[in-house]
Image (cartoon, rainbow, N blue to C red; front, top):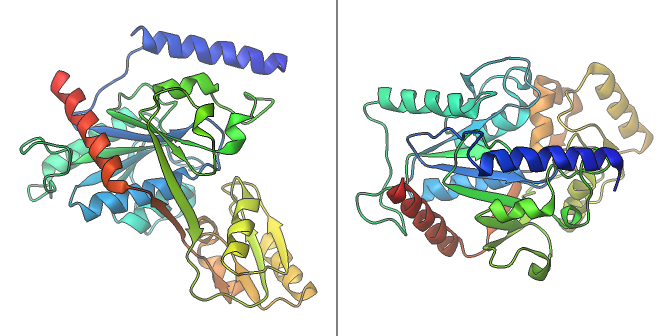
Length: 333
């Protein structure tokens, strides 16, 4: 192992040990917290999963909000995302979540402080919707309103009632930072209540007794240019191209930018030159790129931003498990 990765691993193990022993405290919120996270840097599908989970909660009439750090924003402190705002103030992924789900998204370096603001706002809303009885919860023990903690697996200063971790095939063979992409070793997966497999992974490679949820992921494309330029600023850009091809879209050329990239006038000139060079008839990019382009996207017309569609196999069973665990843990608190 890389010496720097070894030092990083020692530091991570020491930090987790302090939390496990209660020396470092996890602060609790009044309402249940469901964390969605991973063990690697970017690209595991956390944002599409949060959106899917939120849509399933809405179908069940359960109120919720999303707590996020707001990676890449230039603002500081705790604040509520304005869906009509811009990525420099709120971050691209929180904005995408707020626009797709229409729920409160609260940012904070301290997600505990973000959660306290969310609960204060809820108390101030006399007509707040509290949801209907959910599977796995006895009458009078509703799981909602809930907090969804975005990218929360390593944010142990906030206590959570259910820990969901998304796992990719690359994670199983990865190295710790800085030599690789792993933020924690695979042994940390024992903290998870459910592992979400976004790719074909042999469960025998996972900790024994782990609850496994499987998801399928695709792009929802109704109309697209026939010969587009595909571009994106995401963590795993080749996955986007693979999904385009699986949906029957064959880009004539691609251009990849860093994750969370905010597009400049120079970027747009380069993309338009690429379009002319390949005689392309338009562009296709991700919804996160739509956020980071802002009003500039009109200069690339025609352009489409297909949403990622993520589906959970056996969602009723998954929700039964999640609500049962939440109810049991809250009863013991």
